[in-house]
Image 1 (cartoon, chains in turn orange, yellow):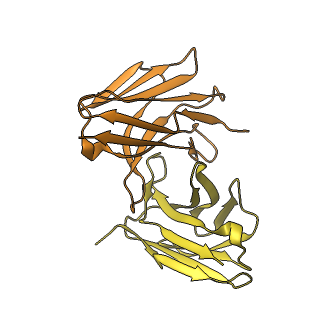
Image 2 (tube, one colour):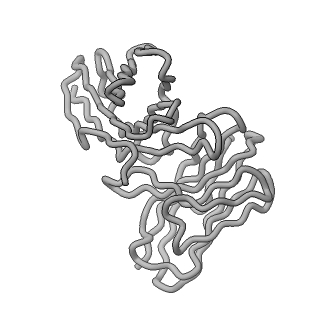
Length: 113
Length: 112
């Protein structure tokens, strides 16, 4: 059972565009929703994270939108740049117990010049 | 120096061989993880450890074993490698009570 469903699998935009990556989850006990960014040949690194007590969080050009009732969250990249080309993973975890992260399958983003 | 290091970075081995992937960290974190990444499948947890005496199976532990030799070292072993274990393997660490995980640079393993 896939606990975090991510779409699309790949995405191509032009420089300056606003790519949007979506994730949906089933487990209502999840209370932490991070996005990781991975460049080729590197390990993933935390980009931005949100808790369910807020509907939006913004850090620079990156914004997470969170819809608790729909059990969905998304990543928006404003004014995208070729340097944003990477694979993006959403994830979720719940407090207590192992608190381990459950990852989506990833989205490969290409930003063309 | 990198906070989380993995050795080797690339490895080609034959079916049936035993192989060990090593992870070391200088972050002082208690928690360590091993993930496997396959194209289109994302990151899947193999094993995780919350301290030297605590080892837990993840979602895909079959065919793998681990050893936590010290707080800073966590090794992943493939007792008898098979071709479908060809993948990119990542080690990660986190601090107790903090959900952010820090990933190493990965080991690309090919089993022929």
